[in-house]
Image 1 (cartoon, rainbow, N blue to C red):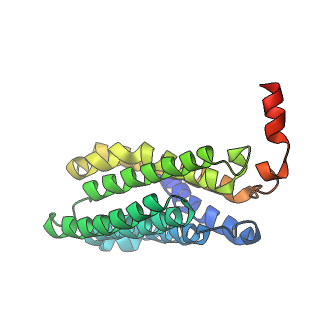
Image 2: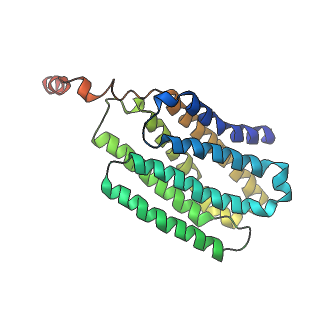
Image 3: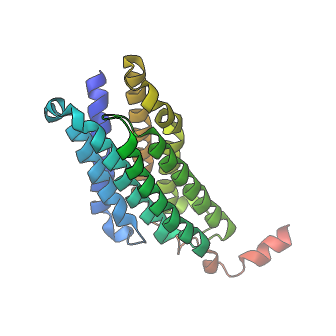
Length: 231
């Protein structure tokens, strides 16, 4: 049963990538293509770690995790850089990205071999959660549509929130308890569950055609007058 669950998790990464290719014309918007590469990279990384090759090269699993932390964060943060309106927040993204990469390298150099990168992963999760919340705040503050759930990127950003809030404390405790078989098993189950949920919400976003023009306030020039009369 665990093997089936593991492979379901791995191949759930490929679903959003396939949907992206099938619905490219719907999603020409800013930065979505980087998330296609994120899912392909995540799929290949997890497939290798779960394969027989990884068994013989087990010492390199931890390096792959560390690479994935940096590269995955780079792709996600580029998506937010392209889609956030606030110039101040975009500058913060650049500064925090440089600091994050620098710290990730420093943590690798000072950490024992085959150690989990708990602190960089926790920092990554914290920053992505902050950027996700700020993105949603921008959409609410200056709405481009009446119904935010008609935007493809709403579902994609929500998928980030689900995954990184659900696994935040796992990342924090992983370095100290990853050698514990019970913790390692629970870590795998919880992480895989939230990864599947992330990919489900990601896929919903790709299946939805962005209806920004159809439900934009600009499409209803008298909408504000109607609201004033009613309220």
